[in-house]
Structure formats: structure tokens, C-alpha cells
Image (cartoon, rainbow, N blue to C red; front, side):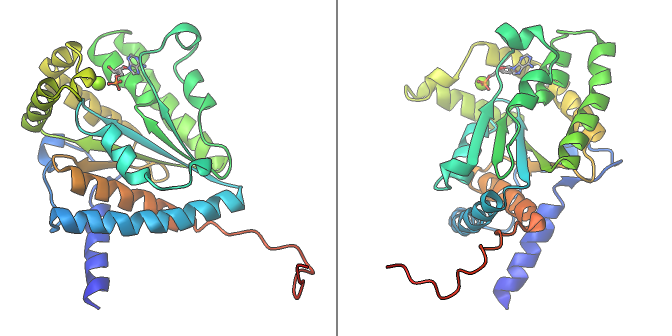
Length: 278
Ligand code: AMP
Ligand code: MG
């Protein structure tokens, strides 16, 4: 009984991370360090259970082969996009899961509209795809660094809403997470990257330029999230100062998305009852 209560409490806490359509998200009012009342070990244990359940649901989604899931992961540098993806998806069947990462557009990507490269790597029926960065960069870094004029990036909110609506109508459930890290925690993690030879490759001098534009990025995130968190393609603002709770929370969001889809394994062929394999 206590377990069921805990489960409900956690689900409520996760649901509170969702940005309701029409609400006015202010990131400074959202926690970066919520522990969800769990110790690190409890969060790790919970994520392990959640992954087992995701594994079952993923197999069913694949077997059903009608619908798909797109999980978009966005964040400031060092908030833990890579670590979240690794920890939430580890051990799942690679046949039904794919990660697509988006860097600054180059070659043919830069010769097309900004959604061209994105649409191509959206999930096939039965697949779960995770975006490590996404089309949202085109209203985030592109806005903050003035790569295009304001009238151009402003129009994109509408494109993105319509694009995600199209995906939803055609069978792809879209869910989006913003890993919300504090500026202090980012400083700690940057320093760790610089000091650890195994991690230094992740650090680019340009990361400090982006850090200097922290408040501009936060405003761009607020606008992007407010403009595009819809009932069918919601944003969740996930506290990201603690890796274990962050991973746990993203696992919960993916699991809840799959539970709502309730994928069904196909009916077996008729006439298989009593068949003996000799
Ligand atoms: P990382 O994720 O650390 O490997 O860095 C990828 C870089 O690509 C980040 O600095 C992003 O801001 C940048 N990036 C991704 N998409 C775009 C885009 N559409 N326009 C400009 N820069 C982008
Ligand atoms: Mg980076």
C-alpha cells in the first residue's frame, strides 16, 4: 500500500513538471535541485524498475508497429543530455530505439529549411527515437546568436507547432524535456570537464561564450517552451542538478508516455492453438 502511495506521489510530482498550454513559464521559479523526496540510491533503483517496464512497452510498440514515440531532449551545456540518454535507454533493445543528434547544420542540411534534416530522422512505426538537441536549436542558439533576423525565428514557433501536430496526427507521440540546470552547477561541471582528461574533449572554448549569454538563453527557452507546449506535444522542465533524480524523472516521463499509448501486441495467426512443433 505504501508503495502505491509512493507511486502516486511520484507521478503527481512528475506531472507538475509539465508546462500546461497557455501557462507562462518562468524558469527562475522552477527548481533545478528537486530530489523528489528520494535518496540517490532510491532514484537509481526506481529508474532500474522503470527501464524494465519501458523494455516491455517498447517491445509491444515494436510488435504493434503502428505508432511511434519521439522524445526531444534540450538543455544548456553540461546539463546532462548525453548522460540522461545513456542512463534512461541502457539495456533496451537497440532494434527499436534510435538516438539522433543535431549539431550546427552543415552541407545539404544548411541548404534546406531547418525542418528538413529533422523530419528525415523522425521515428518509423514501432520505433522510439530520442533527439539529442533538435529543431528547437533553430529558435534557441539561432535566436540568441542572431543567426537569422527576429521575424524569421519568430515565425518558426508556428511551424514547429504545426510540424509536431502533423507528427501526432500521423501516429508519432511527441514529448519534450528541458533539463533545467543551475548556472552554479554548470560552472562545477565545466570545471570538472576541464580538470578530467577523460572529459576534457567535451569542453569547447565556445561553451564559455554561451555561458556568458545565460540569461538570453533562459529567455529563449522560456519563449520556445511557452509557445510550443501543447496538450499533445508537452514540454517537461526537469530539475537537472542531480544526475540520478534527473535520469529517474526522464525515465518516468518516457514510461508514462508509453503507458498512455498502451501499445498492443498483434493478434496471433488463427489456427495456432494446439500446434506441436516436431
Ligand atoms: P554538442 O551538443 O555539445 O555536441 O554541440 C552541438 C552544437 O551544435 C551546439 O553548440 C549547438 O548549439 C549547435 N547546433 C545544433 N543545432 C544548431 C542549429 N540548428 N543552428 C546552429 N547551431 C546548432
Ligand atoms: Mg557541448
